Image 1: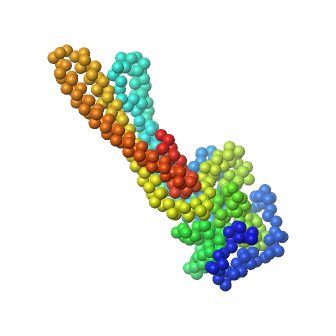
Image 2: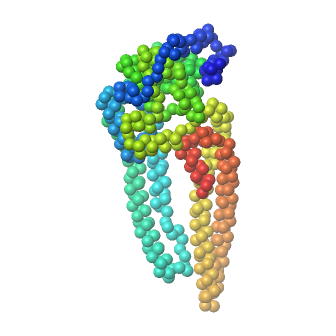
Image 3: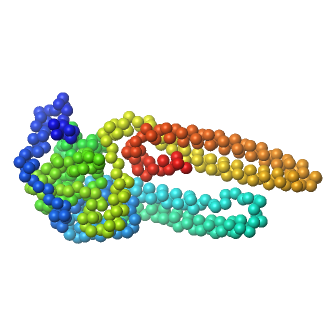
Amino acid sequence: MADKAQGNKPVAEQATDRDAFWLTDLYPDAQALFRHEQPKLSDISDKCIVVLDANVLLFPFEMQSASVTEIEKVYTRLAKEGRLIIPGQAAREFYKNRSGKIAAIADAVDGFVERAKKPVFDKTIPLLEDDKDYAEAKALAVEIINKGKDIVKKLSAVNERLKDEVGGDRVSSIYRKVLTDCVCELNLNEEQRAEIKAEVARRAQLEIAPGFKDHGKEDGGVGDYIIWKTILREAKQRGAHCIFVTEEKKPDWFVKRKGAFQPRPELLDEFRAETLGKSVHLIPLSGLLSVFKASDEVVQEVQELEERNRVVVTDAEIANMRKHRILHDRVKRNRAAYRNLRDHVDVLRNEYAKVTSEVDALSSFAMDAPEENNKRFFEALTNAKRHQATAGRQLQEAEDELREVRRAMKNDLPRMHLPEQAYLFGGADAQAIDGDLDD
């Protein structure tokens, strides 16, 4: 009954002769389940191997420079001691996703550039032209504009380097220097690949860790299993305990209780059996930094980042996401439309304000003009008011459309729970949507 509660029991109709004794195959040494004692992390940290997952390798792209330096120190120490391991699969997943992290940084820089381009005075106030403080404020605004141009120039250079110098960022440079010799490959031949795919499929059917939650992905969950096989091989060959540093929180790695609670027991037992009694600990990056005495400030920053990135997605939520791809696509389309409309409304508002200032000025001139010029001023005023009415109508229509799109997104987003938003858009994107709607 306990195994059924954990969701590890295969569906009876699907069970084959090979699966009938799946629990015996999963835990072949029943006595060891009582005999084995998991040592404390502090007791093994000075002699164990440390394996880094791909998601951990990507974390420094979101950290401050001081924290990256601390991480470099820890990795360098472990690499020099010959205890740091990067599974080849993890290295490939890191390389595949690195460009997305760089692109996110470039997007943030683009946002700074756009804000630096915006003038302080987007319109003039004719009535205040003779006011001393107003004139001084405008002069300061010119200085700000010039500073803004310098900011744009510097940030544009940053983005050019990010775009052109592939792998030239600080994180990649550190990894090139520290991690290159730490990569461990399985080097599978075709027969071994077929065996692994068959084993992954069997585990997916029986919900045996790791990777069965990724069975619907492109690789069918093979990636996680290859990383696990690399961990088992390296620990067995070295006769070593292991710390696996990962940001995984899915139930194919952890027993769940308000988030990740404990590593799945079959992982612990399989590791023990393969390594003749050794133990594996699964911890996040903040845990590794704490074990190896990084500063409290750095550990806290990493913990906060982990909390922001920690998205627990249940089976029901994933199923719900698959049912709501139409909702997902509509929200993304509406978000793009909302941004474009918002920019268009800003342009129309500026145009309307400019025309309104012109109407106000012409009204004043027309009232004070000599009789012979009065007709000319009133003609100009009439044309300006016509322009003002057109601009006002266009602005009203655009604002109405903007409100409709905003209303549609306000209606859709509550139907997408936060984990679903983050799963579909990425955590930062989900927050950006909320930020857009709060403007």
